[in-house]
Length: 305
Image 1: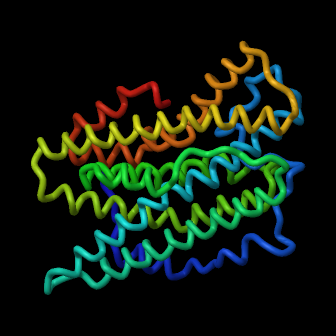
Image 2: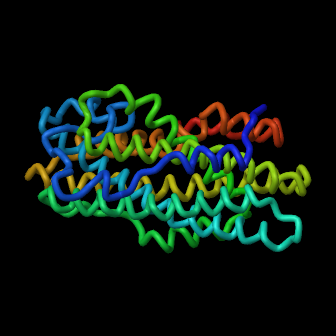
């Protein structure tokens, strides 16, 4: 993929973006539980015809809670990875000042995002009348991801950054039916992640420049292993969502409805967290530039779409 990204340019844009977690949530800024939190392209509650309109809204909100938790979770491995990469750049006498500053800014923003999603989740818990189950704990999932080849982890992080761009631009930006507070969260997250996606691309190009074809192929293998691990977590999260939903609406679905719920919602989660990143043109473009066969392998994984 041809691009004009630079560390200096990404840093300059990041320094112009200036928002605080306290600006987005707390005090009079509360979630509106009369409205949906996620766009239908991500939540996919409409195919569940056996649910009422109110039940679909409640399920949408449970999926919104998943979004808050999941992004807080992935930031748990993004932050230390970026910090380690920045630290590695300091071990030579000729380190690039803009690179180090841009990566440290990146890390600081990821720490802010952990706080952001945590605060929104706290507000959700205050306003929602049942406790929603979640996978985890996050630090164990982070450890499992970080055990993989560094380039595989970098692929995963780039996937996540481009995924957030697609979520906001393609699905959230023009949806006027969403809760404005939740929409504000997604907008401000998108604003900073736009620069992170560029920095991820630069990091990957730098890392891969010293690797041979075999090692890059191994990293792609391990990226897909991470994807499979996360997919198993998404399936479990779907089952937790079913339990949370039944508790929230006060009724148990039939066996057939429960099976359909799990099938539809697991696939919705797959698209939200896997497919929408794996099929992003910029993600695929970077893979193709490194190794054309890598792009073909990713495009041959339809189960995640």
